[in-house]
Length: 180
Image 1 (cartoon, helix red, strand yellow):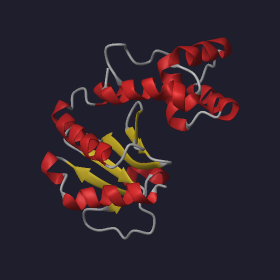
Image 2 (tube, rainbow, N blue to C red; image 1 turned 180 degrees about the horizontal axis):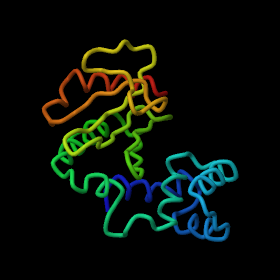
Image 3 (tube, rainbow, N blue to C red; image 1 turned 120 degrees about the vertical axis):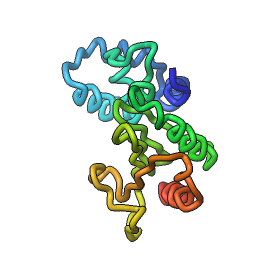
Image 4 (cartoon, rainbow, N blue to C red; image 1 turned 120 degrees about the horizontal axis):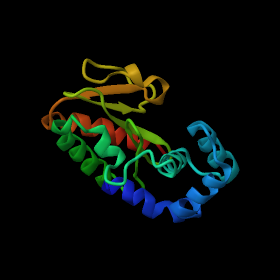
């Protein structure tokens, strides 16, 4: 299992008030047909944050095979991008103990008090890194959000680990600092 997903599961009792098994039982009793119904229920009735609610619903439906985590599934057939992902995660963790890494089906949200970075393997050759950098001008490299829509304000396309340079790290840090 991916370390970030395991950390999220380990932190679940403290952050949500219950361990994953209890959440699974609660959702089993309700037997929601749609993912969005379970998500809404956990958020409105139990005050669970979106990232935890999403993970609980996905894992309760056992949509993720026990031997494959969300992240492993995202990089299946794109293994050449995984070292880039690992380098990004290593840097993001260095920003502070308040950084939460939340794997989802197609991306990984990086959250402080709210999401400030989104990592998405966009193709077999590229990761799209989304940022929340309100009022920041775009550049040739720091583009408008593109496919991220309102989830992010900007995007950087990364094809090689060498592109995780000081400029990129500065943007990540800026997004982190603005996310309080």
